[in-house]
Image (cartoon, rainbow, N blue to C red):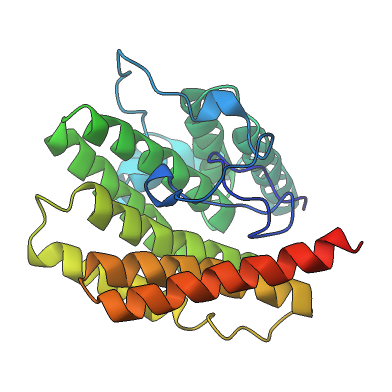
Length: 263
């Protein structure tokens, strides 16, 4: 399955083009790639739309009550999987986040064990959380962030049959959701913010010395891990550690640019 596009712009050197990326704007201290993601998916709106409906958060009983389980059984298993994957692709290429969420809902209705559906829905919820936070609608922002984390955590339970590259990308996006929640709501979270950063740190440290892939891919993973660790430690007030990872991220970037300039 082709990797869908990101909802969020970010430096294209962090992962190969086409990878799923969730580098929230709150982390984007570095230059943004011009054409890395559809611009219409990251535009701000003065009049915020209502939060999109996310059927992936329904309980089993609610899903059955609304007829989704019965509808799902009308299709052979192979068709359900194919239609779910198609809906995910459409979601990551949708014109608006509302349309995207509708696609991820459809992907889930066909196959509730498709981790890509949770991934995409989590990205949409994270974007909504940031928009509401920027407009100071803090109660709605917090609810959206909680939904975002729940979607990532549900998807994380379904990664057994995905590729190693996809699993790493998912988990680093999951870590970014913790970082961005803690960063954008830092004045309202107290100790909960530290707990979120601790969860992010536990994930990112697994990949800081990544040796799972080819050297260039490992460097991309380590670069993103270093950027994330810099943000984590800066938020925790651990300035020495933050400076260390900031310098290392910049060093990884220079190495990558030297390599790619020679190609």
